[in-house]
Length: 321
Image (cartoon, rainbow, N blue to C red; front, side, top):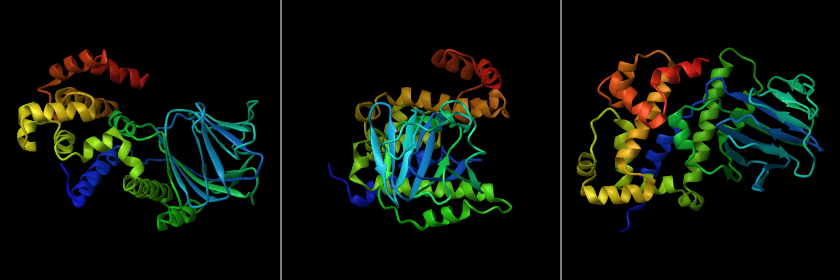
């Protein structure tokens, strides 16, 4: 059955909202990187998401398994972690390594962050280097964010993205003003949203199972209901009624597109939300249970331990340790 293009577009907009409700920058690591050959940076920070804007020159992003791409001026690269990769001129051996704490060292362990500092949020091996990039790295992602981000490709390249947001980010990243960190966090979010929105409009995105599920009029509707109302006592029959199909049709289409049954997905979504709320540390288990659709702390604990193999309290203690 064919569906109107505006319907499909609206479904993809809803899908985009689902993704971006998770990853939001907070004290993100932003840097203007200025390099001249030879240079090659090994990135082992395990960041959930990194946005790279190529301002001038060219650079190559290469993963250990051989996947790679070259970025040109105006391109935006979205890199989904945690796989390590190199970012460099494409031919030189590694000259610097970035670890999980965004510390930068030489291959023999010497600290480089101060030695290569070029000014406010600027770093590199030459003040007038031919390759200039804006790099924004998101911190640790919650479980809900990770589940959604994992549905994206490991590497997305948007060619010649001429958004005015790029110019604004390039200007603001060099400013030192009150509230600048918050300004840059929000700008990074906007660049990400704008880039993903552009990617969703390409034929490249159509191969994603997650996009196919979210854009399906039946399965996408069921996913929206689950995402927006996890506390509701959903059943397959209840979801099917809301989606105007039979239980059998919903169960079959949902499993085909999502890869698991509606109830299995609901359980995992609830527990992912619960894990993020527990990690926040400011809610009781009863409050968390109510927010994600369990009758109380006991019911939540039983489900959490059955699926995750650890109780919520032990999970919270493991994060503190």
